[in-house]
Length: 309
Ligand SMILES: NC(=O)c1ccc[n+]([C@@H]2O[C@H](COP(=O)([O-])OP(=O)(O)OC[C@H]3O[C@@H](n4cnc5c(N)ncnc54)[C@H](OP(=O)(O)O)[C@@H]3O)[C@@H](O)[C@H]2O)c1
Image 1: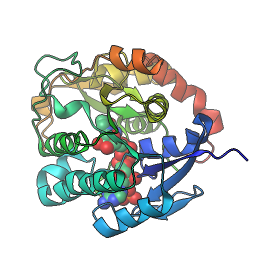
Image 2: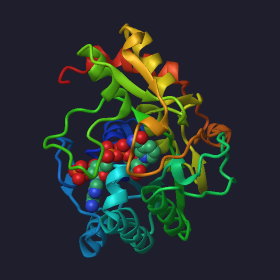
Image 3: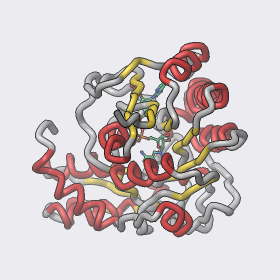
Image 4: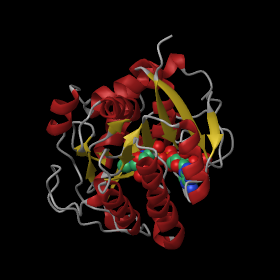
């Protein structure tokens, strides 16, 4: 019998983790998954809080995965700004535990980082540009990159505003993780004929979670080491992205209203333009990242197959 490589997805209840867990077997992996406070009915799932050092090391020692992909983090940027200790514990301390576990069990660690390690002054960042985080969440993500980059077998994937259908978790997310991704939030409001105020002076590269999961699984298979920008090909403001969602899903575009950052108070400072260049990852992984329109069209195409939203 052919033995498949084991892939351990940390944070399988999250948007990105759930996509990875769903398609890992297509890439020839036997997926194992961790869940924290929420549950998802994936096989091979175990509870793990990555801030628990001993439990993290024990689990990795027991499963002996070939690759660990860490998607777990406190992802609510404003929450991290007001709960710094907790953010540091999970986003840095948790990654330190995973890095130690990966080192001692001799496995590859892939860390999901973020476009917001950059300060957003210029946009169109490459992997060799210098990070300069503006808020605490992004600072913890950059610290985690430094921890992971001490390993001999690692890769760091940096996506930008991730979107996609995500619904089957049991138990509500806490305020520390994202209740709903931006595209789902916009579509939910538009469906109820509610207006959406979307920021017109913050730019990013919307990344379809499914496309990101594919890139990460290719990264899991490859021997490539280092940082990879794994984001969508378009560079759009939140307003332009929300408008495209309305247009493609057939909702009245006038429901989407542009606002400036200055009119939309947020606890954490946001970078203005964190669009990423993805040529390095496209070449190394043999993948083509989707444009924002293609990502939204794919979400639209997936509707009939998702019955429980
Ligand atoms: N979504 C975006 O727009 C975006 C953009 C750039 C980068 N990223 C990065 O991409 C990764 C995945 O993001 P996402 O949107 O999929 O996040 P998400 O939906 O908020 O999910 C976060 C996951 O982390 C888990 N988690 C939180 N604390 C944990 C702990 N102490 N121990 C173990 N697991 C824990 C959560 O589990 P429970 O809910 O069960 O606690 C959940 O499964 C993150 O690293 C994020 O920083 C995301």
